[in-house]
Length: 377
Image 1 (cartoon, rainbow, N blue to C red):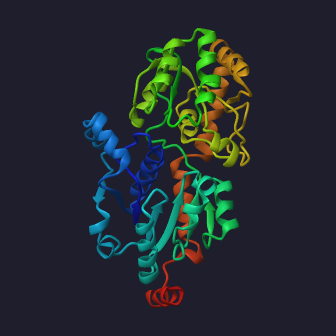
Image 2: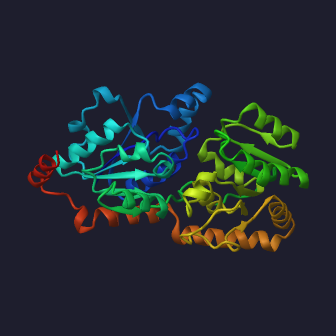
Image 3: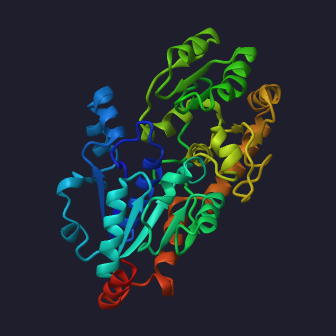
């Protein structure tokens, strides 16, 4: 099959976690002999910041992912007839311009190419007005990265069909590596952002690490001066942006990591972890999480990872993982088991192919598609 994908960026993962999953899915589709073309805007926000901060990192991407490439476009000159010629499926991520989203839907209805909308963000609950304004009439349905997001589309009638399509780990890159040296006790890979989890990072990462006197390192971007000052005061190193393909090597040099979700995902998007959780477990590093609600039973709390209800319990869990080798080994073993049996990008591609292969998702007859478009106009 020929897949055409429109996403914010394949090349840049600078403050752009969706690139992690996208790379894994595209690699898996290519490995199964499908044709995949990925399009991203030439002036994308993430790529622009990456170029400003680490221009050579773009060359690094091509070395790390030799099978992957993006086609850059400008919306004003984009020729969808040429881009979508022969396409069986077009997937459009929610971080695209509304104009492009609408144009692709209209093109799909006219030609019979199947259009799917992919939502991996919280705007369905935090910015309902913007999401309601998107023209998804001609999309076959929505791929939602959690049940709560899928339910929003059903409740508001925004889409004809929805499927839960969780993110997952790219096992080609995310797997345990030999532990040749130890750089420290605790590492956290994540961005500070707009203070939407600043209090949680202090409670579940900074203060426990300081109280235990841990040798700890943080990687990530968008750390304001007050956050950097807090890290320094706690004796925690901040090593800036880390290309995602280098994360497994960093995990291999530390003894544990933590998962600190943003509040929007804890309270409003229950059941959806960050992709960092999938990736940490797949790398075989013991993981302790701040509170979140695993409503969809993706993992086995207390078996695959430990959950801390507050900062004091996080401190106790960190001490236990760092001193109890049997506990640490058990978490690694069970976490890997869950990822490998349920949460790899290969599993998600199986799900995607099942979705596009369902009777309602097969390529429509162009004449009937054109008629449907005209009737809905």
